[in-house]
Image (cartoon, rainbow, N blue to C red; front, side):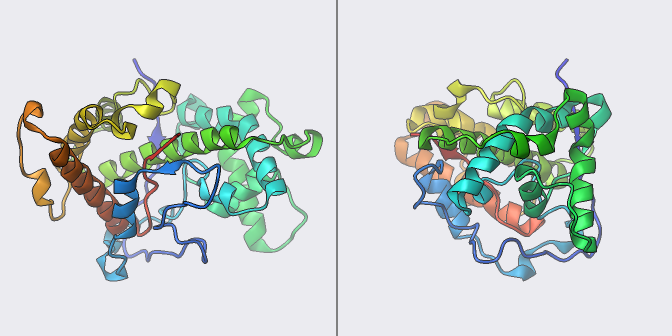
Length: 307
């Protein structure tokens, strides 16, 4: 039986959406970074055109954790200097097993997302701090508590990573691969969280995970197969992309919201043309990014490609 885990989603009625990192528009693709994963045009266009009117956010569904990430957001690696970025990558290589383990371990059966600042504190190796202000203390304490059991079980001393290990210098290819993995992991878990929040009622967490694994055609939501990077949703061949788009639409079929006309046009796989697949991909991407904004109050992390 596949391992299961529980991603905590608190539904505090009346919560208001909070602003993320000011100065970085997360609805726009990163196109000026040599090591960023390559945006998929249809998906990045859909995200950029989301109507960000706060009145559209369904505040009754929001949770205090909605501005946070179950894995580090790739943008925090991009929006920093080279020295710090190398430290982030070095730390992430060391703690990635623990971050995955905390979602699988029986001793870490619940896993809260972390804010970008909490992830920065972890990646720079700065969880313990002499700062006395209550916000910093709470932030570091919560980050340590959330990763602590997994870190301890695997015997990783997170603060030794940055203090005793010289940061590695990463090539653009190595950095791009790591950021693609993070993009993919975040996309999978955001899709799972959204489906749990607004999908068909009455399903268990395991049933939701099984449905998503089937949708993405992966054995585990936590394992990234290198062969996965140019297939399915990530393929530039429309024949290869079509089955994945149809499975994703099937998963989203029970969601609320105005369904784009292209998603109502059911036909057999053999009847799709290249232009039909483009319209289908556009409709799926727009529907997903729009629903994520409406029910989480922020930009979704969307699929990307490698060269």
